[in-house]
Image (cartoon, rainbow, N blue to C red; front, side, top):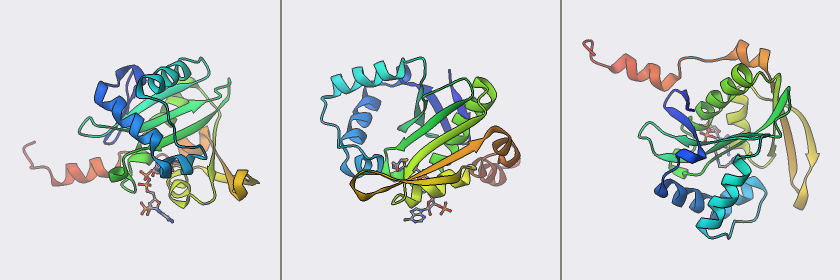
Length: 191
Ligand SMILES: CC(C)(COP(=O)(O)OP(=O)(O)OC[C@H]1O[C@@H](n2cnc3c(N)ncnc32)[C@H](O)[C@@H]1OP(=O)(O)O)[C@@H](O)C(=O)NCCC(=O)NCCS
């Protein structure tokens, strides 16, 4: 299965190549990314991390995808977890810093949300992020998520809970991706 939006492709973890798994390993060990996720940096060797992530991804209540950019480079992971008949929770990590603040996160979320709402048939997708992660909140707002509550979290941090309902997502859907449109505008007339 492949999901697409703009420059981004989402593929199951089974599509990851050896070099892609090296990047996964680096992302999970990165202290800044770990802090943004509220987890300690992962210390597993690559072979064990791969085994654990593949086992997690095979759960029937999860849909986990690698995010690939327009050069087919693996840049991160996006998933739905705690999938129930009408709802699920979204998680996303763009692990490549070179790809932060450049719209890849929102594009990956659009691909995942199209799958969630139009293929799985969910009514609502929720997520939790930290109040001290304004980049993530900005990206989530861009695709239509709205804050519903703030809750105390560990280590004095605050969780921001956001949700997006199918109807709101359909109403606000932005297509085509701005980058794709810009590329078309500058293409020679005979292409
Ligand atoms: C969070 C994440 C998915 C967002 O994806 P992205 O592709 O970087 O998102 P965007 O391209 O929309 O950029 C983020 C927006 O936040 C803005 N932003 C960045 N830092 C900011 C800050 N400190 N304060 C306010 N806004 C900020 C950017 O300017 C950009 O908005 P703009 O396009 O209007 O200028 C991605 O950065 C990521 O995975 N980061 C590391 C892990 C993480 O935080 N995961 C989420 C855990 S819940």
